Image (cartoon, rainbow, N blue to C red; front, side):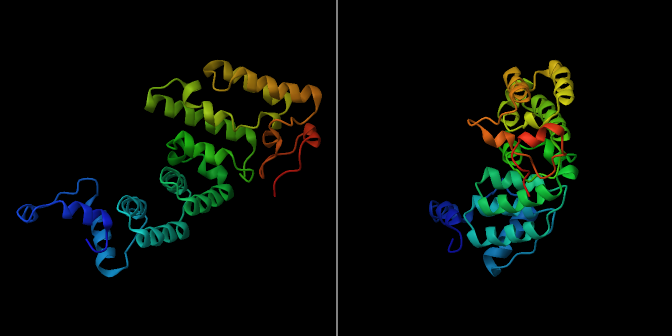
Length: 242
């Protein structure tokens, strides 16, 4: 009770008679609960890659700030391709800016491997949007669009929501003007199968190819990413991110 405000609130509501009854905490796995108890009694914690994210979630739920910091430090130091998106999702869900930045930096360095992981396809719409907003992803836009398409198909099945609906926020972050005319034509053919990307967004990309002019209303979409492959029309765009 002294170490955790949530436990203090929980136990202080019990009468003396109720204190003799076992208190059940259902939302924590035993190994996660033991790690929390270890921290509460020793001010340290033993972590590994299997429980670190769950212990972090417990620390956030129970208001254990110092345990949260220990977990975030461990996770940041041991990030892997397979767990990076899972860690990012926790950061997005609980508004942990520092962890979010560390995870995103790792994803930016290993983008091509990470988009092939199961945890990438399990990202929420907020999670994938936070990734797609980055200028520093080490990947070209064509495979990135394909990864978003696969994510949308998985999310559509899981959530039982139509693909255009589940992906409406994510596709706004795709930079279609980076594609060549041939790539845009191929994209239109693929898009006819699932309506992933609104037609107006594709039309705006064609408008750029016609006018060769960067839009003042949304210049961010004309920014090349770190991994963008050069194309002839890119000379009309902003310099690539470094």
